[in-house]
Amino acid sequence: MARENAIDTILMGAVGAGAVAVIGTRVVKYYHERQRRSKPHVVCTDCGEAMPVGELLDPVITCGCATIRTD
Image (tube, rainbow, N blue to C red; front, side):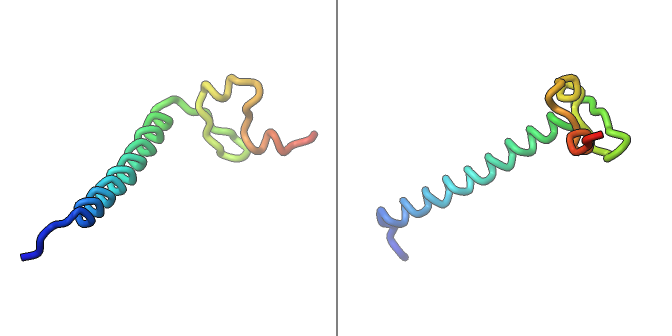
């Protein structure tokens, strides 16, 4: 039976911390995407881009097809 030494313990801790970090970032991204999708959206009739109503009311933020037009 093999004996554990300090290097094994450090390695197991590093692998565990890395796994927690990866899972945690995915959970946070999932939560933010779910929160973003739960807000009401307005869909542009030209390009089909969906924008949250709060962003649409901001005069600086527009959809991609409105910023490209120069006419």
